[in-house]
Length: 362
Figure 1 (cartoon, one colour):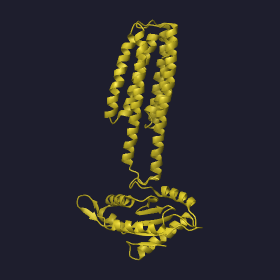
Figure 2: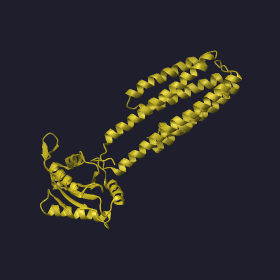
Figure 3: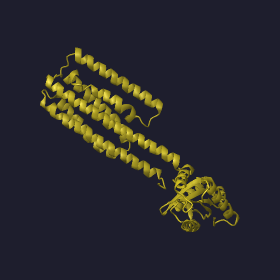
Figure 4: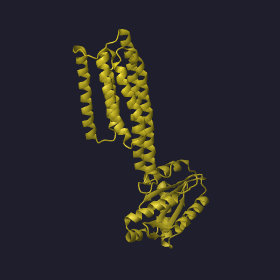
């Protein structure tokens, strides 16, 4: 299980993943327009072939835009929406209703708008935005039907029945492929949001370490694996005189000490060791059932010495030395998780009472 959660690097990595996916989707849309160039050029007159050149240039420009802009995903979505709507309107007006280019509008509304463009907006904003887009789409769809049925468009050039059949097949393929592509994006964004919520629920936002719930989950898993011959161990850690640090330097600097201490405790840990923030200035260390208890105690003593020799720095001038007290306990058959934690906490209390900056184990 991951020990340390750097939310900034995780967010950057996730955004890069979204950007990479958008570049792939942009290539997919560019490919569609390059493919459509073939039937557009073969038909006469070449109105759509000329319009399609602008669409191709648009998606080529999007490659540069997606790589450089920090607001690329959302703005790119709006731009793609406008491009597809405009291109689709020209297709219907020039080739007629029978070619079924108007189905692109339904594809946009059903798979692109609600789930892709507005996933990070408030519910009120999303409903208002979707209502507007659906209204525009419906109005456009109905208007195109009546215009193609009752109005003679100067640039229209209705193709033969065989060409109409080809366009119907092409648009069916594009429609299904589009729904598949944008549904994939939606699923990825939902997975990203689920992962974010999971991180928020299981990781302490100040230190990046697993929180109490995360550590209890680890203990529950270790309890299943433990036997009378081999079991997990825990250690409670508390910063000595931490209240004095907060009172002297302020809570903001106290948070710096907590964050720095989390880095010290979690740095270069061996396999099978987990560190989390239990609450306040208390931390919990867990060793799995495969770690020998004597080796675990040796590691804890090394952690104590590491903290004792460390200088905590905040600002340009303020520094402070802190020490920690530790209480360790080992799982024994018949003990619950709470029993083991309580034994460790009792030993921590003994370490505090007998002078602090020491490890007490049972």
